[in-house]
Image (cartoon, rainbow, N blue to C red; front, side):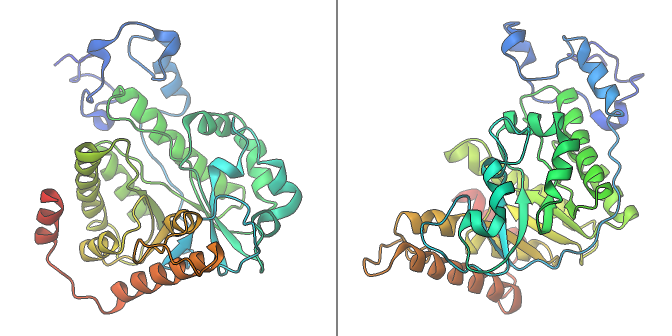
Length: 346
């Protein structure tokens, strides 16, 4: 069979990694190649880029358990008043790096994590790269220099960059970006950094590659993102799609493999994940911070006028921490099929 790439699947050397065309928009292309972000079969150099990174096969080194808490509070910016949020804090890559991604922001290198965020006690960071594509490309281009800069900070974990796998991009673009994420993960480990692979994927073949490497190489901590592009029904459909992938993944890796979860913070949905798997989960949560800046309690959605924003933040963090821990220890495990049906009909 011939695909949009004009290659025959029957003889293609990428067949075992590809599964044929994605839902890409190439058939509707207006050939404005200078404005296009994708590696595309119509652009001959695309195959060269994929060959440069070693093709479509994902290879991982093993890593160690990171012993992360159930709640990882993400503080994206300097706190107006000093605050104690615990010993581990999530660091938003969008603020930690320059806008073009080519270096760590000078304020972090000059002051360190604790003083930059205005925290009362020393912390270890969990760095996440769920940032704009422009930033990710700069990180890729300057990654050798960035590894050295990252060594200046105390890290509990560093999630490998999530190079975008858009469903409407050509399959060659998926393979290139998934491979780049795995390359940066391995290089970070080689640089002595506590790297965690980000499970980026488009189809079952991608998930099977990650599963094979996790099991065979002894990967003890991974990250999985539920962050989606879209609103309303589109986002809801993506969520169910991601949930099915999460279930497929966790059924095939060791139950002791730690998972850092991004893009899902509600107590109900975290409980849903705990019903799907028995792996230790650590949730990157920026909602507690965002709600506090708006003067809102996460538990009630209401504004307690008598509390400062820092007090609200601490209340929000306590609420999420308690709910995540409670669900891990004593919540009844509702049937997955029933919960999935409920999500589908919401």
